[in-house]
Length: 281
Image 1 (tube, rainbow, N blue to C red):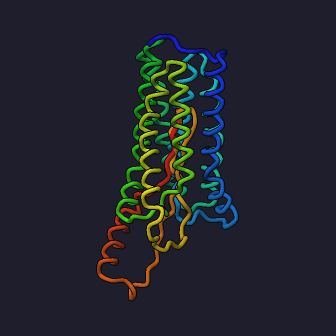
Image 2 (cartoon, one colour):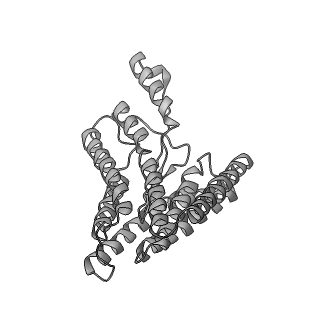
Image 3 (spheres, helix red, strand yellow):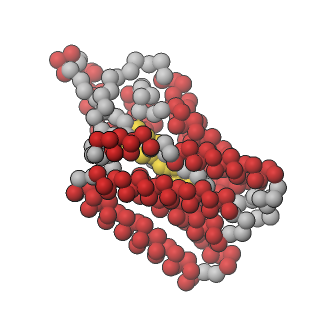
């Protein structure tokens, strides 16, 4: 691949800084959730998985950026992401019930310690120079793509229920904007590993916004807040994308017809799969 622009070029630097700002805003999206956890001294059943995955993603991109030259903007946003996600996890552990604490601790050991350590060890021992950067880059891309697939469950739920209450427009918009900015940055610096995952992020973002426009005026199903929203992660493409979706229903069964009850039952089947998403490079 031909050499791209360096960070000394005003366009590359400006786009990279803009990507950092947008990704930082996405990283802060779960703050209301954790403020509520702190106030209520309870996690109220929401899961820690998205935050652990977000931390793992940021660590991968830092490792990749450290092997590259002229990648300080990737290092800065993902370092900030690591710090923020670590705080989220610590707060979660402070107020989660015992079973959730044990599960989260095991998850951290498995993903953050074992899996990340194994990836670093293998790339350091089995490759050198540019080949090492390429291998780690493809690992980052593969993980980022897998995280981008997460919104499929939300998209499916929106189509089935014809309701966008599970998919906030503002979050979809900023995730799409983040994908566009980081894709542009990847093109400018000629970094395939930064640009490639954001193509998929852009496609899913546009699809979500199109669904929002299509269903925003449809009749809404009443939603009662019983559990904190889950954190949908950005995979960092030098930045992060999170999605928070809160899905809970209470229905007066005496007032629901057979057809409506069937739809409610169908919706309940997919509620468990609706979570927050995070993305980085």
